[in-house]
Length: 105
Image 1 (tube, rainbow, N blue to C red):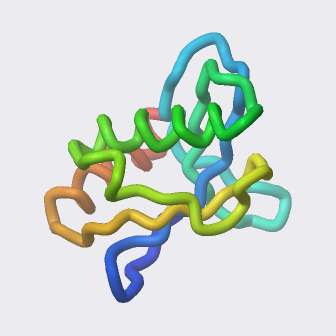
Image 2: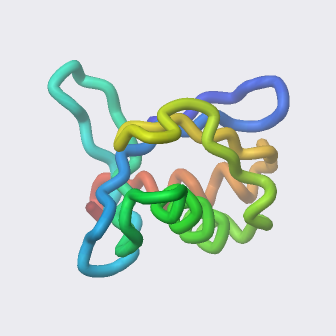
């Protein structure tokens, strides 16, 4: 899975595709090094934090969390990012696992 537990919640590895046709969470993909990341497509352009804000809004909606519970902790200007999710609640983990289900990708 592309996430791990940390002290104050979860850390999630994502790959963002900005300027996509629509906003969508597209399952888990592995890169050339074998690292697994949740693929997130957003229609927002990667300028002035618009794509990051769209990623946070989309993921917050999918996990049923407030946007303030999700933050970019690495990769602010890169497509590959690490996000902190300020909840390790079992319901949140179950929703995240469903988003990462490779059979849906």
